[in-house]
Image 1 (tube, one colour):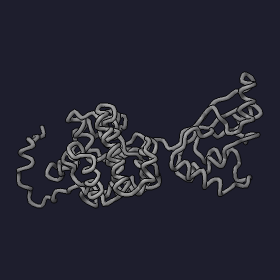
Image 2 (image 1 turned 45 degrees about the vertical axis):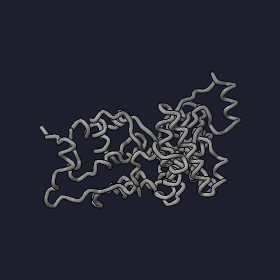
Image 3 (image 1 turned 135 degrees about the horizontal axis):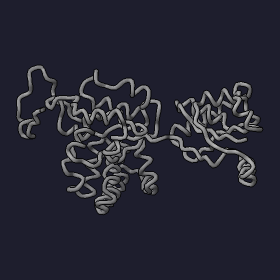
Image 4 (image 1 turned 180 degrees about the horizontal axis):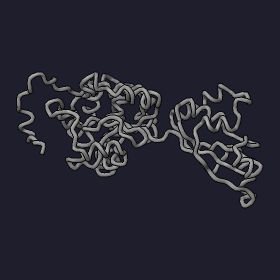
Length: 329
């Protein structure tokens, strides 16, 4: 059975020979300042410690606001007033007029490069930086949000659940600064990419929630829409006359089936869609194939009509591997 040291033992014991030094987070320690300082003084402290970086300041305030708006509305309101004071002290009157939640969350949205840099900054050893995950999942995707998550939801990730159940620890206690155990996690579409040790320890300690950079599904499809208003009207008017269902396939499968290479594609349109999808998009019309009959569909023939090839090309460009496709005959 692994011996667990008391906290006093941990912080006072001598570091083993050859062990690395503690790694301290670059973020200034709040030490209760968010609660104890006046609004004016807190704003000044944030401006000084975040070097007038509006996004970093707003991110700190947003995290406090989101985590506490339900349980402690007075404290959450203080964060909003502090935000306004920050803008005032920085001379950013243009932002004061936009103090609604949508703008707050916009400031709390991060690019893939910013999240990748965050991971690199908090990783003690360069050799431990998860380059594969950074290059494949993080850098290509923008629209990450810093928010509160339920730790138990991470156990839906099979790899993390196996790690948690194993009782394994990736770092010995002398390798980790206790403050760093609460660095934000990184979660990509439900998969924990960075923070296995931190998340496991918090779960074992009985913590319920944690801060995390989260990227949800960036594109959400409207399976009731084909993207063609005339088609949608016909399908609604003659609902009982057509067979309709959705199947999942890769963008390449869709493009091959509709013989997209035979049609001229609008590169500007594809680029515009890709930019929108990368930032996140809702109610995207479902790519559609319309066949004359069941035989044509089941024999793998090209559809008589289709819609959505530009959207599918854009989805392929940003790395989406599977899409819903509406089938009609």
